Amino acid sequence: MAGKSSRSKYAAGCVGLLCLGMAHAQQPASSTADGLPAAIRQNVIQQGERLDAMRSQLAAQMAQIEQLKRALAAQEADYRTLRHEMGMDGGDKSAGTANTAATSGVATTGTAVAAASQPVGRAPVREPGPPAVAPIFEQPGVLTPRGKFVIEPSYQFGYSSADRVDLIGYTVIPAVLIGLIDARQVRTTTQTGALALRYGLTNRMELELRVPYLHSHTDTTSREIFTGSAEDRVFTSSGHGLGDIEATARYQMNDGGADKPYFVGWLRFKSRTGRDPFDVTTDCVNRCIQNVTGTGMPLQLPTGSGFYSLQPGVTWLYPSDPVVFFGNLSYLHNFARHGVSRRVLGGDRESLGTIEVGDVVDLSLGMGFALNDKASISLGYDQSFVGLTRQNGKTVAGSAKTVLGTLLVGGSYRLSDRRTLNVALGVGITRDTPDATVTVRLPTTY
Image (cartoon, rainbow, N blue to C red; front, side, top):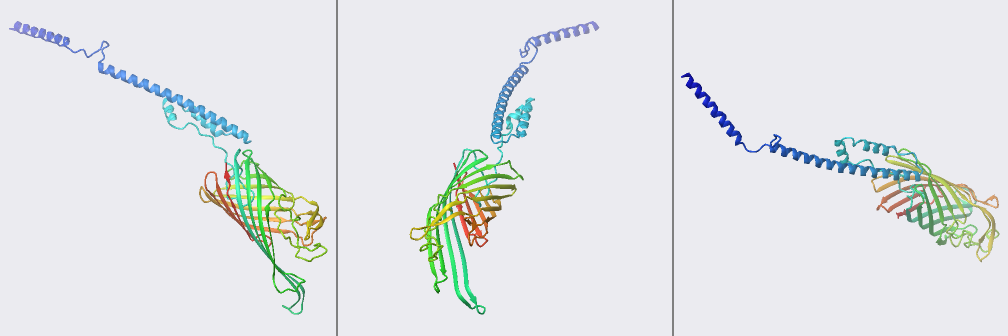
């Protein structure tokens, strides 16, 4: 019985081995020769293709980075050339530091990809010029860029009045005068249209030519002495024509900046192209010295000073956010004229000899405020000290040193990138200064 059981177990084992062999023979061909399943092998192939695509993308990004580095190097070269032309050879360390950082930033693959997605380096920033303020003085504080033209038409209206009362006699009791009274009022209006041309020779130097045209009118109301008249007499004179042409050169002497002043030196030459004061006819019967008959006033008003002048000066600007302080200091020298004679009524001429007009020292201070990116306002004060006038080496009778003080208020509005409207108002605060002066400028850059 035991033998029969052993034989049954042996037969069952043989049948199991036979079935296992048949199952192995019938297994599908899903494995490869290297023993890997087909799905795994396909995944490996796809991963390899993605890696190849990433390598190609990385190579393209590296080429783009190299191109950006070359562009940055070219920009730095242009920047150094510009600084050399402007005389600013101090160097710019920030650009070199940015270039070094951009070069070392591509050491790894992740850094290279990040660098490719961000701007490499920084474009060179040009050194700022003097800050723009509303010009309320005759000397503008901003130089014209190199190679640029500025055409500036302007219009100025001025009004002045003077009252004078001369008492010639003696008083018996207070408020009772025995003698003659000379009461005189003089009212003068002056209109000046001018065209100024400025050219930027370099970024630090500009040249200017200014051509004015004047029209002036004077009304003099008086009761003249020696006449005993109780009525006012009005004497009117006017004149118009080309004024004195001026030429100016300006040069920026230093590199300013935030909390650093700018200094601009300038030199102006004034011609005497306008009508000479000694060429207009004076209201005298024979000679104004020998015979005082007549008013002694010109029948026509001159349009020029009659003297050549040279005026050196310096303009300074100090930016201190949000205010810009500025000012001018200048000295005007009038060249003496020899053999001067003036025209009197009847066509005769009276010899005056050598005339020396007093020199002028001018000082002005002000501050400008930027309201926004287009508008600004300025406040300032201008004071001039006028010297004595001499004739043949002697001081002219009645000539005295004069102080002219003017309070100035101005505004500027940028109409476009090329055009700006400037308006300035001057109010005289001393007796000999014009009562009011309004100036309108419209500079246009080409």
